[in-house]
Image (cartoon, rainbow, N blue to C red; front, side, top):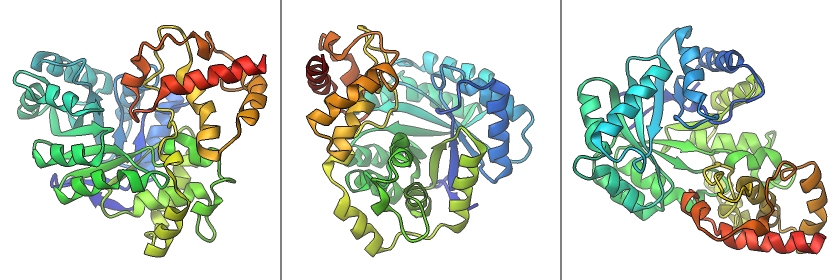
Length: 371
């Protein structure tokens, strides 16, 4: 395993991190906890979670794992400024996370899900979340304060130049790096630790390896190439992976053990294939999954990816709806796309600022054409 310095903190973190958002919900919690312990035995020492992950169970699963997990490891969790907008609320959130995690401190606590500068300003205002986190830091409840952001590079630079945090969590991968790299570089230049979420683009890369074969070098799969890219970047401390099986852990660790940086020629080849279609693909983060009308928006956006990424025609999208409605992504839907009332709640929650309402309108047309 490769280990890297996390900014100026002195922590040496594994180049592969364990993200607690994608446990197998069909398995008992103890089995998922055992997967965490297995990852630790393979050299992974950075474990990231949040109160809302895995139907609210993620922190508790990590807590179960930590009870019987030897060695040194680092724990990360999060809290949104829109929910914890006062110092007292921020402290309570930290205390509740500590209880679920079963630890006496949190190594990295993220101000979570910043989608615009107003969210950062809300966290930093007098008497706000940051003030509460500083108090927790003084008392030893947390070691370092970081940001979790889905903002453009200019906003990232503004925030890290503010010099109030030790690290930042960003969505970056081999498909979107031309559009996200300004933020990564700005954080690195400021001496801030960088953790990359969605290194496999929310599962899009392993799901579409045949179409993405151009990403890979000799003797590797597109999935391995995507992991190698993020793991080997000197600007990135940790590639945060969501694991569901030991085989996935083994593959990520094997890539880290043999990771060779992408050459300028490699990057030029990849850039030649990338378009804005890829940057605007849904990564299935799930933050929009709270539609008042019952529309399964993440499922619809994953279905829409077939046109966004691979250029499927309207006719092909219509023809695939029968399967999706009966057996696929949309089989358990409570409402169709045409139930959208354009309230905007999903777009406000979207970490990628996607035009969800516009896409639902287009999908509704396909559903009517199918009938």
